[in-house]
Length: 203
Image (cartoon, rainbow, N blue to C red; front, side, top):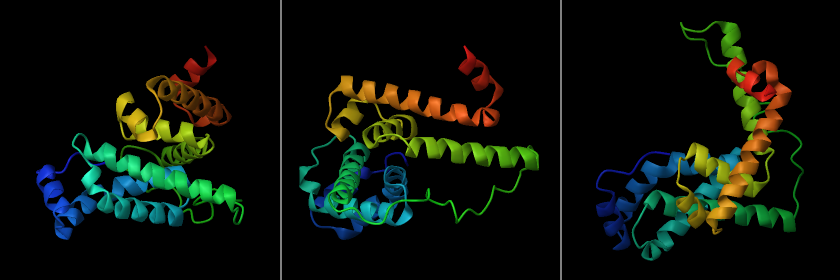
């Protein structure tokens, strides 16, 4: 996710006073990161877009509850809760089963190779990226969320604890299990892994 917006506090203060344009500046700055997190939690584009939109609506309504600190972490907490709320609704009211992984049929193929890598390497990198994303999607929701907040968003344990509403010990435990889960899952894709990873996996 993008780093803090320059003069961010000024926009937040203005937004609290009802300045919609100021809030829109915050939305534009953070929308890609919020959507990215929502997509990785929800697993499909439509649900991620809905969750991200709901998160920003809730953030605007709850601006008065923001009392300082990392606005990014505050926003991600709302986004994470919006995703959790939707997942809970799905459990209570199951819809159509998810039979295919997101993007499985809408794959545009691997990216065009650069001058530095061969077409075969480009294909391998694309396959590895899809394998990693698939392994992350296969984690339990709470483990997946902690992993994304830590290893993708690069938040501290304290920030993750505040976002997820659990203590530091639980954050560390979930993160450890998530990393082990992804590592174990990737064993099935050993031939795609860099040589260093393959060697360490055998130890």
